[in-house]
Length: 85
Image (cartoon, rainbow, N blue to C red; front, side, top):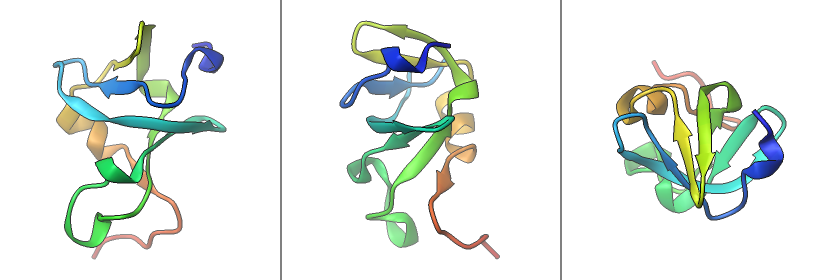
C-alpha cells in the first residue's frame, strides 16, 4: 500500500460500505481520523486511528478497508488513551 495516495479529507469506508471516518493525516503506519468521527461519550473529541494494514485500496476520494466498518472500528487506537476496563 502506497500511503502517499491517502490524502486529508478522504472518506474511510469499510468493506461493507459503512463510513468509518475521515482522514485527518497519515502518521507512521496509521491513518489518523478527524475528531468529528470520534463518536460519543468518553471518545468524543479524541482522534482515533486505523492501521494502514487494513487498507485494501484507494479509489478517488475513498480509502477502502479490507475489514467491515464495525470490525475496523475495533482496530482504531486512541492516542494517549488508557485501556478500557
